[in-house]
Structures are given as structure tokens and as C-alpha cells.
Length: 392
Image (cartoon, rainbow, N blue to C red):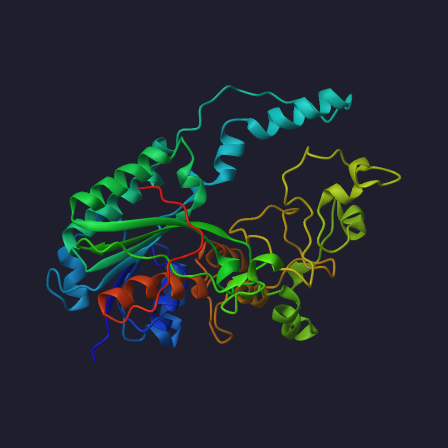
């Protein structure tokens, strides 16, 4: 039986495509504008048969993509991709509006502490003014030109924030006008076997009237939730996942933590952040004031728990850090994102960390792609998810 042909947009390091390949489909075309991402794709055997295009999605037409895929209109099985999400992220809201500075200032004033002088300029967070926001429109434009049997769209959950919601709603309405039945739901990667709590908004689309069904979670971090439910396993802890990379063979100069908060950093126990050194936590000599820093400041992993979200461009004191008082190594970051052990990344260390952090975990991608691909191929194995949010 021939495999379902797939085109991916905003391919990045290939996380979405790796998941799609694991779901049994065929990667025909991968598109990205970042030369390092393109080099990463070309370096890995999984994409030897794929047409890899280093091009701007906004300049591409559906006909060009179909030519590269060796397909005609309506012969495409799936379109997958997640437009860059920085303009929709929580960090964009937290910093662009001055909320972080305002919040810290107010907390400090309330507690009688002086934590510095802030100049807060009143601004309204407007992601529609960010050029990256228009990439959602280009995804839907190419969807209309390609008319695949189905699609999978991924983005940060913050795209449902009132400031970003109009962009999402326009996308969903256009999909409906094109004749797609859509299902939008919240997916947490940890519920699908990924050792990382990473929430995303997934939109599944099928041509016709059959509404796609979200994949059933396979794991849960809530013991009460999975007890008595044999199809749910306990969430995957990071300890066993990172154990193979603890030796000196994998050591990196960049992992050493030094500088302003290094002393305080070493005092924080596994699974905690800066709040371990506050009066709120009962510290005898508080260093910080609770709720005055972003939640992942000096955040450390706990070996018996899943990881928090891996950031694409973390600051020098932004976690998660390893419980051994160091930064995470590149192969550890890749493992937490469920990239294959043999997968190779191109570019500088900074670029590689960004590629890994921007990717959708391949294991999560496998589940969401299979939910649509199996419907198209007539081999649906899905059961309606226990929990999802409808935003259509």
C-alpha cells in the first residue's frame, strides 16, 4: 500500500516530520528559511528522499510545492507545520507590555523592598503587528492552493489568548470555508510519553464532514487519573532519560554555571526554582522575594519528575537546569524532546539549542499526525480523548 504523501512547512529541525514518518507517512517536501535547519535535515537519513527547500514560505506557491513533491492538486495527503510562535508566546506578552517589570515593582513596593527602578511604558500587546503572525495566513493560503486530504497545525497555547485569538479564529474560519472539518485541542506532551510538560494548541483538519478525533493520551502525571485505566501509564521521568549522557564524554564548556547567581544556584534543591531561597519557603536568610521573578528563574529538574518546557532561547539564568548544578547538554535537550539518539544537528551550539527548543517533540507529533493520517487511510485506531478544549 502506498504511503500518504506529506508536505511540511516551517520544518525547522524536523521534529514534526520525524513524528509523521513514525506514523507511517511519506515526507515529500520540507520547507524552512533557516540555513542551519536545512543543513540539519540534509544531514539525517530520514530525509534522504525528501525535497528540502531553503525558501521563504511567503514567496512559495502551492504549484511550486506540488512540483517539488511530484504531485498534482488534491493528490497531497497531509500538510503539517507550526508557524513561528514567538509573537504569540507568554514571554511576548509578559515583556512587551511591561507586565513583568510592573508586577515585580508592585510586589516589591507591597513588601517594602527596593528591587530597582523601573520605567514602565503603557503598551498594548498586539501580536498582529508582528510580521511572524502573518505566517498563519500563509499556512492557510497554501492549504487552499494544495487542498490536501487533511492537515495538522501546531502552535503555542497562548495563541488562544484574547490578543491573539482573532488570528486563530480567522484561520479556523478559512479552513471551514475550504471544506475542512476541524478539531482544535490542547495537548500536553507529557501525556503522550514525552518526558516534558509542554502544552501546545493542535488543530486537526479533514476534508469533508468527518470531524477528526484527538488522540487518546497514553500517560498521566496524576496517579488518580491513570489508576484503573490500563491504557494510561505514569508520566516519564527525566532521570533515566538523561542518565546515558552524564559522563565526561558528553561534557560541554557551556554547561558550567558561573556569575552573579552561581552561589545561590547551587543552594537550590532539585525540582525547585529561586523560591527555595525565599521566606515563603521558610529560608532562614532569604535571598529573593517570592513571586518577583519569572517562574523558570534558576529552575532545576528533579530526576523523578518530567521536565518543564525546553526553551529555544533561554537567558543565562533561565531553566530548566540539571540537578547536578549545570546547564543541560545538547544530547540531553534532544532526548527530552524525543529526538532519535543518532539524530545530528548542524550549526553553532546556540543555533542547535534554538532548533531543539523550537521543535515539536517527535513523539507528540507522531500521535497527532496518526490521528488524521489513519482517518484518511481508513485505519482509524483513535478513541475520543478524555480531555480537550474546542476552540472552533
